[in-house]
Image (cartoon, rainbow, N blue to C red; front, side, top):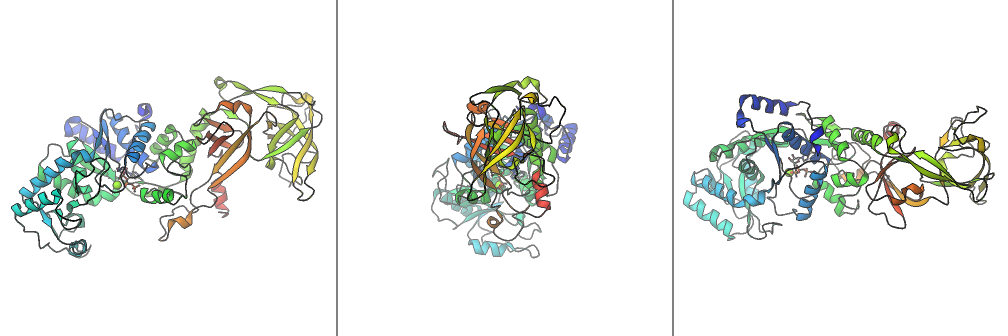
Length: 563
Ligand code: ATP
Ligand code: MG
């Protein structure tokens, strides 16, 4: 559970709660909720809200409910509910038995609406959608009163009952709050409370054909659950007076305080479910859990850990103004977490065959290699060494430039955990000139990694034994978008996709200790980055995702303008 590293740092929301605790508001109770609409898989932005709401509950000894805010039948589904449950749990949070659904409150909300009609505070309006918009006015001009404003309570009750009974078509009538069409805050200009929508809801089926609007449903759902602090994102700031208006009119027992904070925006990706659905539906990604997606499920599949995501959410903190957080910060949190946790192994992504001419045919040695350089408790594994190896293609150059210190004709390097080898020859494709194999000799006296005569080498490269290594597919990921803020531009965000966001390498070789790796297992492939076994792995071939590189190479590339 996340309780152990729940945030203890302060911010303006915790300041408000501290003050409420001091003055005894809400009788010293702290009750929050995370209220997603089940119309998509949760993303890293939701994680910020999850960590904030659950983190506060843990910190103040309160409770945090998980509530499906499912008041719109279109686009909501059980699949999304399940993803939310799975991902919030995976992030390390516990809502006990407090999983709620706004759709369970439909009857209560209906009765609240009837109460407002009886009080003369709500009316059935029969303007068309276009007329309603026109009557609403603008930021600079007040709205106009609806011609239906003064319908009698009886007529309103009759119409509202018949709306519920399904007598009217979509859009024929709506129920509106009677507030003030001249209010400078457009939200307060007689907002819609219920609308007719003849659609099947994933939970209530066809029991209802009128559905409550967010502003009406949300404050009352909070109140029904006895929430004390209703934390939401900044775009709801103008809705706060309406939130309070409904609760004040109805004189409910619990009147939570709405507090707004800035939503998370992350560079080089997008955070809107509507846009993420587009990527899924157009087949641009393989699904919601594609490791390129900023979804929790995508990040999990890619190898991100709950600890890293929680650490990230804590580091970005909560503020009152919108900003764009650098993706590099998230990646660094992942890197730091992986650094301490993952065993080191050797894998070769783009293999080049190496033959050690003076190593006896058929001979195999087993090297004991530590899993972690700083953590002996992680133990060791045996890595076989033989006459034929694979190294990375990029660790050999026929004509090396000055600063290249790795293998080259006549050049000696150290094999990680093993001998010094020296390149004596190479085999090339006569047609293309491509180097097919490199021939080396080894120095049997350098088994310790050092030469008895004290001679030095400039590079240590990783390798695997050709006949012992396992085949693998490795998927490398890069930024999903070429630009930091793809939604900022006024054009189609799809065109900013990074064509190199995924590279699939099918000829990779892994050291044999990885034989029993199962999906979700995480490793550092020495010199290459952190990797996580993918569920696509089969008995024939393992599949690994690169979680993150060892260093932030992107910042450097972007600086040079090569993307
Ligand atoms: P989206 O724009 O992705 O559809 P949403 O706000 O419509 O997001 P909800 O399911 O309504 O999605 O969100 C559930 C909760 O998560 C809300 O309280 C919302 O404020 C919060 N949330 C959503 N996106 C972010 C974000 N990027 N940063 C912080 N909190 C967020
Ligand atoms: Mg929403």
